[in-house]
Image (tube, helix red, strand yellow):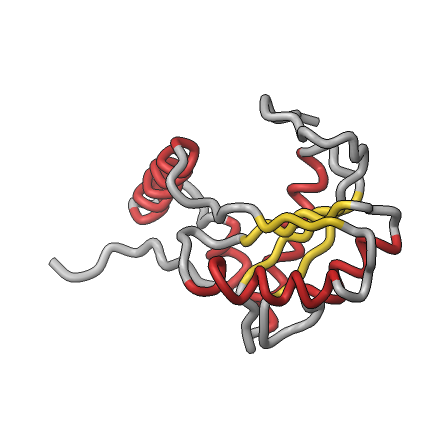
Length: 159
C-alpha cells in the first residue's frame, strides 16, 4: 500500500473517507464508483472508505457519512470524484455534507478539492490516449471501461 507524502495533520488515526460522484440513472455508471472505491481501498492505508452519489442514486452522502461514523470515524473526509470545480463542489456537496454532519454531533468533516489540475492527471490522460490509439490500431484490447460497456469507443472514424 502506498502512502501520500502529505500526511494528515490531525491525530485522527482513522478518518472516514467518502468518495462521492454525481450519481446517475444508469446503474452501470453508478457501479463504476464501486470499482473506484475498491481500487482506492487496495492502494491506500485508509480503513474506512465509503462510496456516495450526490444525487439520483444510493448511497447518499448522508448514508455514507453515517456508515463512516458507525465504523468509528470522528473525522469524515468527503472527496468529490469530479475533474473540475463547479457548483456541485462549491455548494451542493458541502451543503449535503453539513446536513449529514448534523446527525452526528462531535464529528468533524472536510470536503476536499476535486481531482482538478494535477500533474498526475496529465500522465493519466497520456496513458489513456496512447492506449486508445493502440486499441484503434488493433495493437491492444479495449480498456477496462470499454470492455465493461461491451463496446469500444476507440475506433478511428471518418477519413
